[in-house]
Length: 285
Length: 189
Image (cartoon, rainbow over all chains, first blue to last red; front, side, top):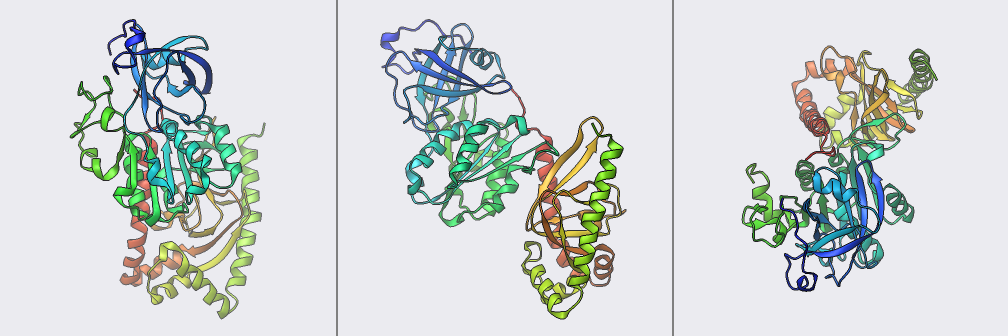
């Protein structure tokens, strides 16, 4: 990862490689090592759609792709949930209100919101995979009557590692979305499900012939979830997933995120499953 | 703070009184009349595990079956006990768990309606591998393991029909356990 030079802000709007300055307006600690940053760009920033990502950078440290994690239609800030796993994400997660962060984006192809109208929507997420799906859930719930059943199936590691816990509780109170959470590990005081998220799929209430599934999480989890969705009757063309690869340029030039005939940064990160199925089992890519 | 002995003693007491007493009571009730027997067969036939099984096979299995209702919090079985039964759940959920000194009771998996609990009946030495506790009021059909083992030993068609249904369950649980052991939601680079 190459550090970012001080950008020429005036030219940024025309050049997707030039970062633009933003300020952290709010920081919320979500979990141990996970924060959500609300960032306000100093200049006009293109509107993003749910599932797209921005490159967030810090001079001298580096730049990483982070998905949008709030409804782009709400508010003027860009909301990103970051887990500290490497030097850049760790530095980003230490930012506090008023700090500067450099932005490029939005990039990539998002979730197929227009195609969901009139259909049941099954959202399957694991761990931090809920973050890129959160904007979709906001959209679906904001226009609830446009969709059939809405189901959220989420897998987490333990009770203390459930992302957006308060928000999930608020969604549950609406009574117009079915939510099931399952954990990998739990003590006797946990009253919910324990086991893999794929086990929730056969129990979920949706019509497989009129449903679209949106899947995001660790890739191995997604492969199992896709198999379970297929077993439940969903066609491969009705399953969308968000892939994660080493994205550097974010515009399909550098080739770091090549995935078969695709560049994840440009043609994804959201793909229809039947389009990428042949390459999901190829270990080398 | 309760000691492990106190806790275990209470669990055992609660389990035996609340669970087996109720089970036995319902078991007797279910064995009373033909009408109830037919109802049991109907419920067995409606269980996803036995979907598509022949009527003859269903009647054989029903001869080993009785209905039970287990109160929330009661233990169905404890790790190490003789696996002399299994449960076909149709209401409520149970937690499979194990106790670890210093960490208390850990839940490994939860199972709900449409699932089978207590697969240890199938595999020698026929001992429950985990504790099974009702998380809420649970209703199930209990299959007597000795009865079922005798029937499948004598009837290869029934044996095949049951194994065709149980092996995928075992495979699914193995896959699930492997996926859980990968700790995919952990903090990895």
